[in-house]
Image (cartoon, rainbow, N blue to C red):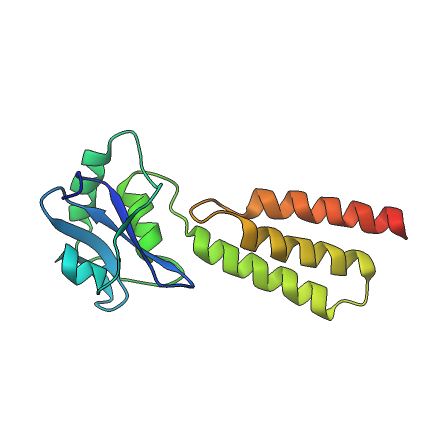
Length: 160
């Protein structure tokens, strides 16, 4: 049994699914399958996958479990209210989805790198895409993407 407030995650290969342990053998999560925040057993939550412990936490994880129960029934939305948003909300953290941030920045950077005729923009876009994909899960990719982009742009300017 996981302590109350522990953020649990499932690895689906291209993304992680998150939930908050209630400390009593259940997981509260914003479910794409049910299209709302729901409470399920470990087995139902896991869907046959190994349950992993996330790095997402706060100073008072037990309070996060209490908070999570308050959101039962809240609707699911991939961009505005998904499982990662929910886990962070329950913990009182910035409500964001680092996974969505990574995918959007990677797509934007790759698009700029592929479509631009400008060498500086190509280098910057490629660096932004790469930095986004290399940023560890559960960390916002914006800082890394900015630094990589600026370095690549600087090198491209110096090389031209």
